[in-house]
Length: 99
Image 1 (cartoon, one colour):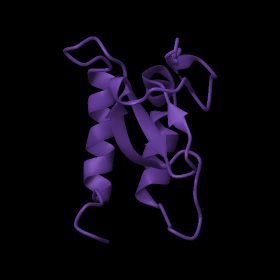
Image 2 (image 1 turned 180 degrees about the vertical axis):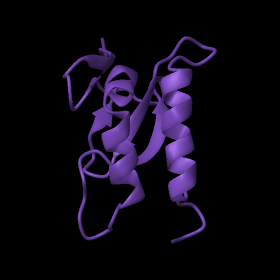
Image 3 (image 1 turned 45 degrees about the horizontal axis):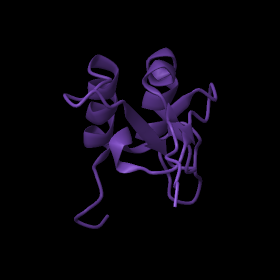
């Protein structure tokens, strides 16, 4: 593990925080990035918390589980449209370039 990776405990705490407080002060939605590269909305994190908890605890670098959370992030940081990998709800609306 390098110094920039989160510990398993920090990942689990981040998911708990996302479930308790899904919106930032700037009214942006927080989402979870999974080991397979998919994004999860707060509703799917809440509904599937036990699965996420189990997968995040047993994460193995050789096996990328679709429920293992790597990090949580704020939706303001992304320019492209992002949909939830589980329910396909739009989390981030893509910006149009009118040039």
